[in-house]
Image 1: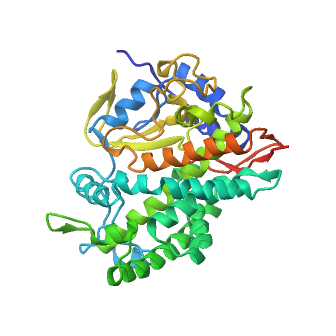
Image 2: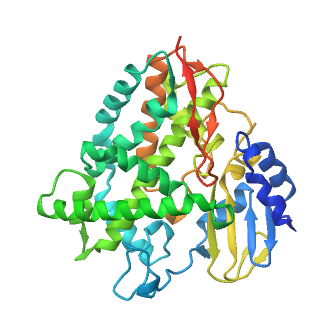
Image 3: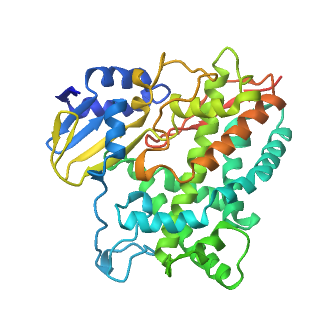
Length: 403
């Protein structure tokens, strides 16, 4: 297959993410993808927006992540996890094999499908309680989309009830700093650093307590997990917990908010979710993905379609654009909650496919289903507002009414 590539103006690329385009970036993604599915922004920087090319980058072992850097003690941030040689400890999501393979295998032994399945009755209980106590008019983000995932991930990890509000605050601050450096706003960096330091300090102490008094929660399982004598170091445990917090909270919040907004703009509203919430979840993930972009590094000289990509090149994958590629299915610009699940990249591909996908899907299914059943007349009560972030796409407010 021949892949079209042109040298694109970096400034033109940056305008894809301007505040004025935040409510609906997809027409701009479409024009970009149709003109340039693989773009060279600079000598060693590429942008991929076509589904086939994005899938290749996410699955091909030629694309991965830079190796963790070594830090002098004077350059380390407070509470920054490093190994015995001074190398920064990263979560498995940003590691290459064999480090990725080892760490993900250990985490997967603790974070099992059975553990997720056991949560289903409690997720339903929390969801129903949040919906039932909401007034006729409410902000769906404040009332359901934010509290549900943080309650679930906190229960999963065994966080005491009194600590969950600051738990959510830390998560939100860290998530705002996930954008690539060229999209970062200075005012988000310092709060994210402080939140990460607070989070690491909190979980370092909670992990010590779980070692002394283990419980029936994921933190206790991670503390105790082993594989042929291999265990998680303290640093590996802490960065894994940070990943689980953001991935298990922010992205699911956005899944629920984006899905309800798309549904309420659809003629059938939330009605299809009452009986087919699994299809609703997959369509939301495709149509308005909570994760809009990700990055990879070429680990060796390789090719992307017919394009030569030198080792060390940075590749930005526009997940939001690729998910609406016509190759993903017919009429990709339309939201169709009855659509049979098809191809999308919302959870990634290959070895980095999201470990928490079953939990996110479960929460989404229950939230959409219970809203449809318990608030069948739900409709928009004002204009929604979007978070000022790009990597994670989600709403800050979503006013609704059930009258």
